Image 1 (cartoon, rainbow, N blue to C red):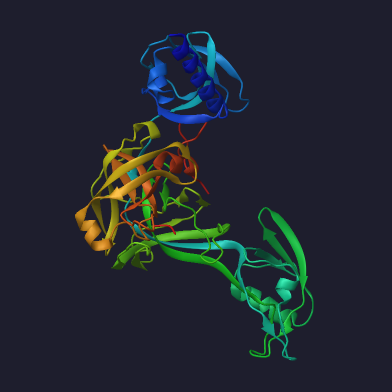
Image 2 (tube, helix red, strand yellow; image 1 turned 90 degrees about the vertical axis):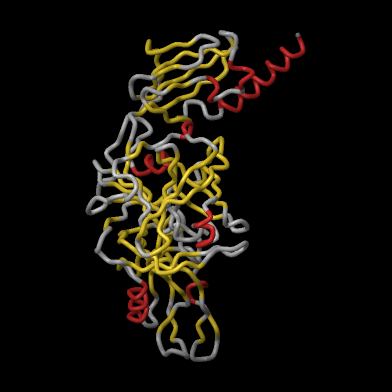
Length: 438
């Protein structure tokens, strides 16, 4: 009995060390009235010897204090939390060996209208992004690149030229032409830093115009899927992943954007090594319109001008937290023809744990024969398609696995709601935003 006890203590110390790397971080959202038990954090063979007490934690200062809401002894199966707020769980082995302190976030249940509708996304960047370089042949026949020589790089964002803020690629072209052979002062954003450089344009012998050797772009447009709509705040979430520039693969630092309704006019099915895609057309303001306020790793968020209606779920559905999601059958909602939302069967194969907040919290597999026949699986344009399981919104489709288009990734719905401001990490419920991916 001595050796197993020593092994157990060693394992406990190792687990305790790992868990304490996340000490005082909210590792779990939980609904008011739901239960917490040691099984959520520790292997089953340990839980019979673990006790824990509950304290209250201050969201701003990080201070912790004991509360009399709940305390559990070794072997107790669960604790029920009756009020919103952060709670500090202090775990001990055999009642006296400190094991770990973990903060959970107790929140009121949140309900949203699931999406599934196709949307057109139009995003304009702050400034103009450099997406490529092109040498200029001057009048002497020499190939030079003034921008590269000045230190400008692909991925830089041009904020201003000679003190004039730039908003479009055409404006950059006009200011370069206006400057002629005079040296231009250009302010760039590179990462989180602003950089000032000077560039002298040259006349291109091929076009007869002044150039500095750059390809630039001021925004992007594409088709995706609406994930949810929160009625009281009018906030929506869509895509489930960040919008990056197609050439540089860098996040677009947005200035403004909007979404409109879209219809699907064709499908290019996916196959191994080559993702498929929806062929979409924007419908203008006919049905869905709204602003884009945030472009994040968990999707885009903003406000809709008018509510949306889901053809299958007339009432709002509760949003599942990670502990409520199970491996097994689920469904997605998306559009494959015109603007008709349909349901398709999938399987949740993995719930990634510990979750990495990169937008990939689930691994899913398409099992619906109709969907597989039409699209080959997950295709571009499905990003944001809501995932429903047991009457709850659990997440949204984000990426296809290129070598197996029947499988892909999903983002957890709770992450999207936190990013949208509907579900806060330190209060019970927010009010929402005011003001190769699938």
